[in-house]
Length: 444
Image 1 (cartoon, rainbow, N blue to C red):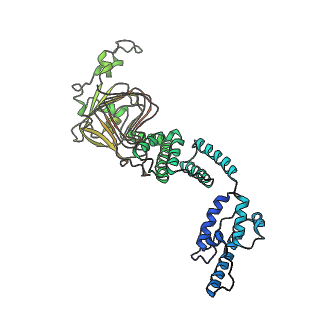
Image 2: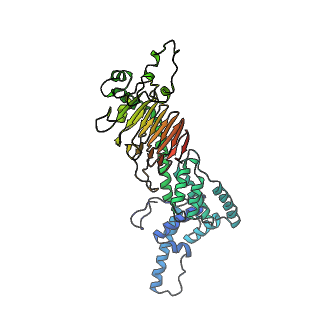
Image 3: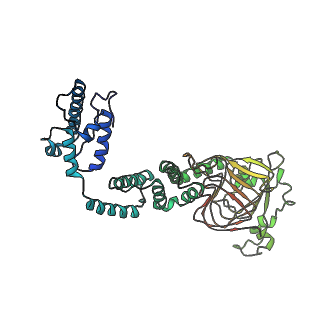
């Protein structure tokens, strides 16, 4: 309610009583009366002047009459025409105020019935599926204020507990974190609202990211193709330059030339056990420049589209600051690092994952995947957003002795069947999520 600087002036906006919500209106009017300095006259009325009064008493009486005139003026200004008809014949502020109280204050039995209804409403109060946290909390505050006007006070702790138990399932993770990290007895409702709105913002960001995810992946894939990925670049490099040691590193020429050995529409020599289980080519990656490639993505880009043979990408120790995409048409890639404490892939982004595989039969061993975008989780901080370290959107993928580090949504086990053996996964909120069918197994 806006007011002018001096209490001798009429406030710019006054609460108008139309016969509804009398308790709220009286609360607002008491603030107006107190600000104008007439609350005592509204409560006690004007003291009658005694016989043969002194000049001091006359001055005091004149001051009371002035306050009474101001009080009745504000009462008349703060009611609508229908309510004004009930008090227009009364000349003093106290008389008009008492008539309104007699007319609109409900009796105890009515208050009791209304309070019972509001208690039931409070017990059933739940957040709607498409409702914002702020709107849900506001509905709770309005209801508890109505209960207070009927004589029952809902404590701050009860409000906090009601919010936590009335949220939709999307908030289960953050509710558990708040219950473990915060003292609910001292937690203020406004602080709880801030933490929940931060989680709500994260959910909205996740939805937006999913909508744009396909476009981002297409752009990244197109970029990887421009870097020289594809079967032609693969063919041009086979057996030349740095590939000369492939036979010693596990290269199996039988796997590469299977069609030539018994071409009759696929009839002929069957695949041997070695052809099935061992990679046909080994690619080396190191930052020193002494290997086939200096970045992991460039090694993946060199794998031909439509590859159907196991490709071994051996990665030397070091921190590789890059974003990795294995597209759908490049399955059967085996990434092997020097150990999860020695080889790591790091990136800082909230738009999509540090490491994304859409290709079936992706295997990794001895690598740590990290998204460094977020700072450590603090429930009172509102800018924590989704920052995935790894997203797996493919089938038959496995990770051995790997690390997954992040804060928000660290491992997105999106879809498909996956296996994690002796892996370390770290996060703050929702750090493992998705629709994949996965097994997490410890070493022992």
